Length: 238
Image (cartoon, rainbow, N blue to C red; front, side, top):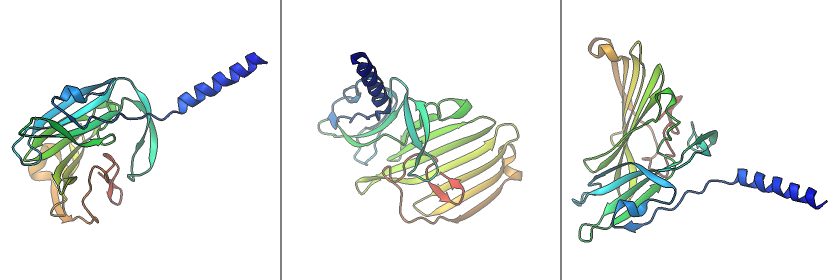
């Protein structure tokens, strides 16, 4: 009987362990060097420095990655429903402001969702292409697909103590034929510029239009969960 109960307890323990939700670490709020912010079992896979709050200091944006794959349920389509379970290495985006007098870095925001994982790019592999800082703005670029490919770009700016999405670009094209649709979003002016045509014959084959963008308020890292999670127009996801 004791052996039977021991076996049941072992099964329960294994089931409980399998169901355990992954807990993201909390990035340190202040430090003198980027190495001080790396959580145990995580590593830096990309980083960039530049002025993000117009004070002349070299601020810092960092992408951390966990050292082993886990089961994650990721949001697609409507910004709220976690519908797709994937086995991959979690990533964290952390942005730090540098204090000019002391040189200390202070955490502005930690985001555990927005950066696409290495398995989310399809046959092209890791979709994370670039993080950059220009004109006090943070640029994030992704790409993926196979014969039909996609490129996504997002620009965030720190204003009124929050990170707002100011512009974005979504390019969808066929690698062989060049057929493509490109959408450029300017959220400050509420304009959408669409180009439909061919990558190889941009001057003669493309049709360009512009229209008003309708949305209630600017999205932030808190209200825009991740790429492919904002249905900005019917059947159009950003």
